[in-house]
Picture (spheres, one colour):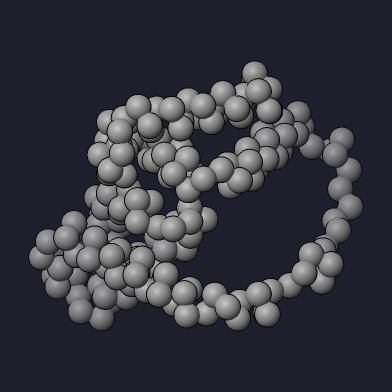
Length: 187
């Protein structure tokens, strides 16, 4: 890794470790909504270490990133557990939120943009629906559709039977198709 910039080394490490890191964080997290925040913390920490200690500091990349991941998952939930009782005191109510209204003439946009907006709205509705399901369903769904893992691998990572994982994924997919229409492609 000599003579490579920190950005190049970071991007290389990111590409090599991201999938495994997503799987680890997904399996260890208490709530799937925390996954992006934890991943961001992991790779921010990695980047800062590369800046401070140099690109040759890390000997075993996979092990080092998973060590950071383990630490960040622990930090995230231990900090959350410490403050979970006072967080509602500082949360905004829906009525207190400020909204910005932008006046847009939809006719100025082409059909593709409109269909992309409808597609994004559908995905948001589906994601909101998935958030009402159990963490087991959310994790299985996340690993299957987002991480492109095989059902047998998901079962192994989550420590459950393959039939349980299949049941969660296929039952939820059918529920989504019934609720949001047969045309919905969950993938």
